[in-house]
Amino acid sequence: MRNKKTIGDVIRELRQNKNISQRELANILGVSNTAIYKIENNKNKYFDPEMLSKIAKALDTTSDEIMRQVNESNNVENQNTSSDYKDIPIEDIEKFLEGRKMLAFKGQVLTEEQLRYVYAFLVTADEMYKKQQEKLAKDPEYRKDFE
Image (cartoon, rainbow, N blue to C red; front, side, top):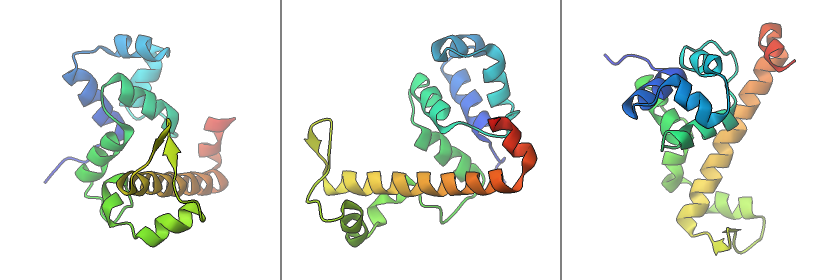
């Protein structure tokens, strides 16, 4: 049986594999050592997706890869993550584009595969946002992290 991992656990493992101290990671990110400690030890009730992205970049990975490791260790199934992008029906992509023939990023037209990935990312981000908003509405303790 696998041990369940949290985002903090995965970040700690990645940081240690890179032989980077908490202090070094904090300096790279421009945050306090305490902030990194809290992240790795799951002391924050809310985890900022932007911070996850910055941490992932500093550790030469992606936030999607960090979440994949968390989900894999917790046997999470049937979640729409970007790894499922190949299964997205083209009709959903066309609806997402709302009649536009193409989408470009950094001056390059995205391929169908890239469009599927972008769509999967946005759907996942939207689901995460909705869950967070539900928590904010229901849990006054959770809300304190935003005040």
